[in-house]
Structure formats: C-alpha cells, structure tokens
Image 1 (spheres, rainbow, N blue to C red):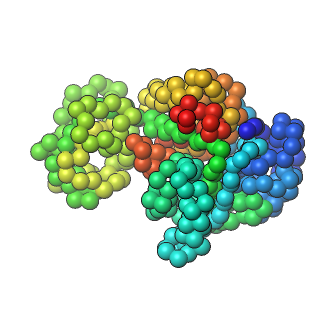
Image 2: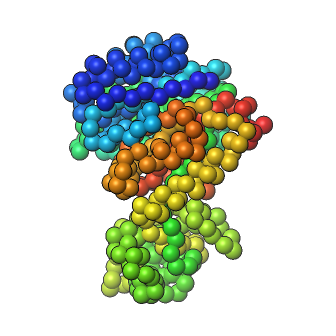
Length: 399
C-alpha cells in the first residue's frame, strides 16, 4: 500500500491539473488504484470536465471528490483561494466499490439498497470502511449513515458535506469521470485495508454533568429538576470573565455517549448546538432528540480549547500506531475552523504531521463532517474528522 498527496495553487485549471497529476504519478511510479480530488470553488467553470480529465490522466481507477471553499494537501491548508488537492493510493488486495445516489434512493428496492446487499454478501463477515461525500443542499446524510450502520456491523464511516457553493446546483461531486450537482457519493473499501477514525469536536465541559429530568423531543425542560435557564444562570454567575464571554456565543450541549458511568471526561460527549431558548418556559432546544435520565453537560468552544482537544484526540490515535505508521490519511475539517478559528493557516494538519510525521494527508473544509463518537457515526459541525489507512494485518488492533 502506497499513498501520496499533491497540491497545486495554480489559478489556471489546466495547469493545476498538470501539476497534481504529474506529482502523483511521479511519487507512485504507476497509476493509482484510488484517488480523492478536492477543488476550490474558483474552478467552478471547469467542474464539468475536471474529474474526467484527472481520471484519464491517472489511468483510470476509482476517483471520488467534491468542490470546497478550501482544500488540504501536501502539508498545507488553502482557504478562499484557488487550489486543487489530490490524494492517491496504490492498493493491493483491496476492493473499492463506489456509487452515487439521490435522497430518494434510500428506500428499499432501490439501486442503492441492492448495492448494499451485494456488498454485504461479498464481504461478510469482514469489516468495511465507508467514505461519504454529499451535497448539503439536496442530501442530509443521517438516514444514509443509519442504514449503513444497520447493514454493516463491522464498519467505519467518515466523510463530509461539500462546500464553496451558496445555492443548490453550485456544489460539485466528482465520481470517476462524471460531475454531479446533487445527492451523495459512497466509497466502500474492503479487503486488506483498515481505516481508523478520530473526531476532534473542539469543546471543553463546564459545570457538572446533569440528568435530563424532563424533555420533549429536542427540547429540554428540566435538568436535575431545575429549568435549564436557571441552571445556565447559575453557571454564568459562577464562571470567570472569559467563560462568561464565551457563553454568549460559543455555548453547546454535550450528550454523554455511555450510559451508567460514574464519571465523564472531555471526549465522552457528542457535542450539539443550542438551537433555541424559551425564556418564558425556561427551556432550551438542542440539535438532537433526547430522552429522560440522559446525562448532558454544557460545553464551551474557543481556539485554545479546540487546539487542546485536537492534540488529545490525535495523541489517542497515535498511541494505536506505536509499532507502525499509517500509509495515508484524509482530513475533513469544518469551514468554521482553519484560519478563522486559530488565526493561522494549517493548524489541524500541522498538528497531525507533528504527531505522525510526513504521512500523505489530504482533504477539504466541509459544511458538515461525518465521523464516529462513542462508536456511533454522526454528522457534526465545527469538528475535524480524520481517517488513517493501513494494510489490515499491519495494525496491532487488527490481529
């Protein structure tokens, strides 16, 4: 297994294609079996012909990708300016299956369900890794994620929602030699390959864990027998000035992913937005449905916390590779991170390279990131989701 990452800043699309394909073929020495192509919106006029040209230059193989507001590759993160990123791999004894679908294709009996059934029959009972890319205007991936988790018990899922466009039809999805402007793409990898994932949510807990004592759907009406507004008021009064400032614009709710624990730490929570506040009833609404007796805790997000959480998450991932090194990696990072959060370009990919060395890494800035928390896959915001790849037998956890 051999991976490489190529990047071009050339504003001329033809020249940029020449650069990334030449870099890739020179690094691999032969055509790749799999490639991921990410292109900033500056090349939109050429999106219709972009994947076909790159696919032909690389000699065929599987190609998957999308448009983005910024791309990641070759040790750089390029935001709000022209850039093409290409991550490619030569794979041995690995099956790569890919297909496109629309939101209406998730019903039983569709081509998508038939593809999943055929794949499950082919690989059973072996694990499979999925990479998902989707158009945020026409496809919400939660239902697709749940269906894949149900059909494939031994699976890892990662990916992101394309970015850069401002309206339906402006997003591009690349599959082999075609361009689509809606729906989603699925890549399934099976055989001699392992994909390990890590999601950095960038938040730290404040206050204490609380039981949801009453709720209706996604509305929390009671926390430990008190109204959520009263709990927040007390929390605000006890917080320092910096946390009080953050509570006004960067306050989130973390939902504990493991029931029955006596203690919860940072990283044990699924972070969700507070989507509404009802002062008259003392209730808050969050971006997920809840049930009574669930444990939640309020969280804050800032650049320092995001950096510390990223380092903690990548340290855990690195600990799994003490005797080896990943062959390649993908990074799906929120458009709300990057230079806007940290005040500098290349932060998250830089931390990754400091942990893992000069491993080929590529990806893009997303309108939503897909990755697991607590063993279940979710669509996130404000996160960085990593996927690292290796031959199956080279990872200690696979033996």
